[in-house]
Amino acid sequence: MSKYDDLKDLDELRRSGAITEEEYQQEKEKILHRWYESGNNKPLLGLEENSYLALMHISQLAGYILVGLGFLIPVILWLINKDYSEKIDATGKGIINFMLSWLIYAAVAGVLCLLLIGIPILIILGALQVAFVIIAAIKANNGEVWEYPFTIRILG
Image (cartoon, rainbow, N blue to C red; front, side):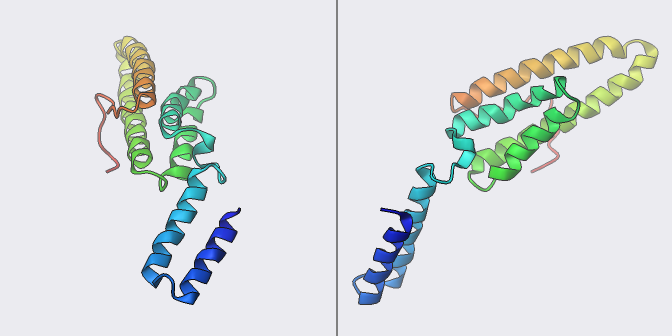
């Protein structure tokens, strides 16, 4: 039985007076949500929410493969499913805040490279970024929410 069959049956119940308009709307939402949750529309790329959150975190490391990819992929993952869950929305904002914060820190360290003290700072920033992303991905996969340290809250 498809969701359309379910909705048709539900509409017939409403028209016959067996259920009220309010009950009809509630049941309709349940049917639509059930079909969405069952994977027929493949939300979250077919992944469980925790796995999707871990993917959002770990995708930042794509920037080590191609410049900009580590920013683009998590933002796209956030944008396509931010309305699906508050947890995804909050995680996406946290990742963007983290990336923007580290961009600011890297820019300052880049300027300090003129004084030669920026080079070790850039190395430390790179190592910390990788470590923080891995920690966040593991925690997200375990269902925990982890806020990145040293992050400036730019997005609410």
